[in-house]
Image (cartoon, rainbow, N blue to C red):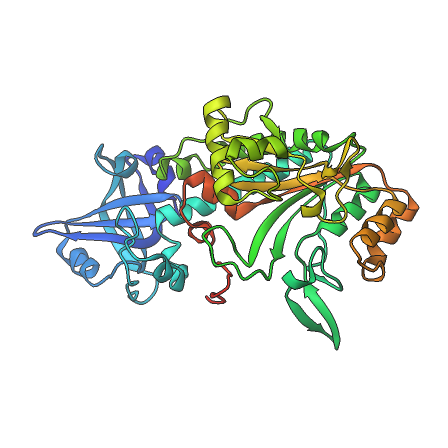
Length: 428
């Protein structure tokens, strides 16, 4: 008999079916027992009246994996409006050791460190699993949106010979007796691949050896990167990013509607045109000193409130960041060379995306490195490609975990990360 998932049971009323999953909850009453079985799609209520079956159920702790064969019977108070009656129950493994928290409760009451220590079972809780389903749907939307715009997915090295932006923020390792580093970003490679495909994207891990111990930083996270050629300036990149975010949220609604409902979310709308302010104006709105070189988290929050109040938008572009705060490959604003053709996208008052137009002329790279007192040699393989003709181009990178955390209202990015890696955590 083919296994049926819980979500499909309402179409099988009156038939005998086989389900399998985990014992989510047992309620043992005097004359009847209720067994709640959890699978990947939801919960099934099993009604046990036979004394022998009831005795077997009594010996099955929560999280034991079982198989149940029974009759699908309508019951408006049961999950999905049906339940299994006249069941036989067979364990598919030994009785489980219960985790140190109750997975059947609506919310996990354990502290976040306890949940992370026991992630393989904590992630089974419907709310934790829902966040990961939303992340998966968001990635699918990222890919689908860019595929429809003739982007090509690429896969670039995660072990590199030089750092991308700052040698102080890389993880060093031994590569067959030579120094190497975990890649901070696919930045250099995705730019080079513009010279091949014109439009490229990548979904992959990036590594930042930054000793941050905050609710918004991880040492390893998933970056959604895109790069496109033949742009006029950074505004072309911003337009693609806007459509990409809309596609991601549409796919979350389509693929992960159940997860959205589990978490009680209302998905935000992406405006047809996301409001944008220049960095200098952003400082004024946030009440920051006019010579501030960057936006602090408090400034981002103030800008998020302003965007919501003034424009009714959860999203806000801040453009024209000072060149001094941007990587050497950033293209300056031709009209205001001290400022960049770069941007950040704030989502509900939190920096979510960094992007902009890049330099594309070889001579400009030589000048940019010289201006910063950096030698060309460590970047030779990257910079040399610009001698062979590269179009004006730009791109962006979205931090997946930060996006999902903000979307679901998580207080800590680790709540939406399956197995986070940070300053303190290397296991499980």
